[in-house]
Amino acid sequence: MSAQTHTIGSMLEYGEQLFQHNKIYFGHGTDNAWDEAVYLLSAVLNLPPEADRSLLSQQLSEAEQAQIEALFQRRVKERVPAPYITQQAWFCSLPFYVDQRVIVPRSPIAELIYNQFQPWCPTTPNKILDLCTGSGCIGIACAYAFEQAQVWLSDISSDALEVAEINIEKHDLTTRVTAIESDLFSAFDAQAKNSFDLIVCNPPYVDAQDMAQMPAEYGHEPELALASGDDGLDFTRRLLREAPNYLSSQGVLIVEVGNSAEALERAFPDVPFTWLEFTQGDDGVFMLTSTQLHQYAHCF
Ligand SMILES: C[S@@+](CC[C@H](N)C(=O)[O-])C[C@H]1O[C@@H](n2cnc3c(N)ncnc32)[C@H](O)[C@@H]1O
Image (tube, rainbow, N blue to C red; front, side):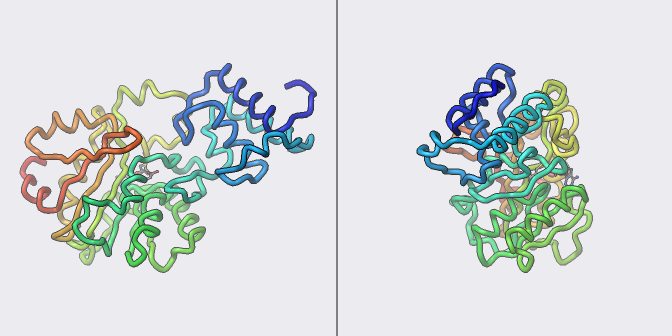
């Protein structure tokens, strides 16, 4: 970078050009070079997500400029997703602490939470399980959406659960949100049987071919959080077999399978998955009711 002093606007232009020139991959919170530069610069200057454009002409101090430049260079050289650099990600308009023990939150399930899972949940859920919780973003956002609900966050990774615990504390939800280390349902006791009104799950679902081709940025995320066998469905197959034992009679299962949706349809052609629609054009999230899971149990 030249020795010139920068305004916020010219620093952002510099970052945008740097990111475009180096062809970094976007997919962890932004989808273009300008927004990526805004994200990193805002972290250094402590700006809110919706900062005013009038700030663009503000002069940066040399120290601020050097700090921002260091983050831009790290983003380019190490291909680290920006939220790992700032250790903060946004989900459902809420801030979450993140580091490389968990994936960067980005699930389209956020939109379902904003809509309180309407029209998919027949009753207001009192007991919610966020299975495969990672940072805890889905379950914690559900706790905000349903203020009376008790929420469980579970994950097989003790590392991930440490991050989820940080976020439970950060959001002051220790009385209503509980973290459990568990391989699927293995650590849940008998009381958990037939009890959850809503199980929401963003599991590992990337198939072997996609795993082999992913941009470098994804290499910073835990493989345990992404890979799920040849067709991406190793985890989901187990979930479909076990979830009916833990849902209440009115309960609903919501699962993200992303690009593995076609493989799921091929594997279970007789099962009437409801594929949910999203305003941003996302897809790959299905819903099954407890009744359907029991009815089609022989398929799983
Ligand atoms: C795709 S990440 C989702 C994280 C978070 N829910 C989100 O949306 O950002 C999947 C998570 O599933 C966890 N996981 C993988 N296998 C599991 C298993 N058998 N039982 C429970 N959790 C598992 C991983 O540790 C990882 O945190």
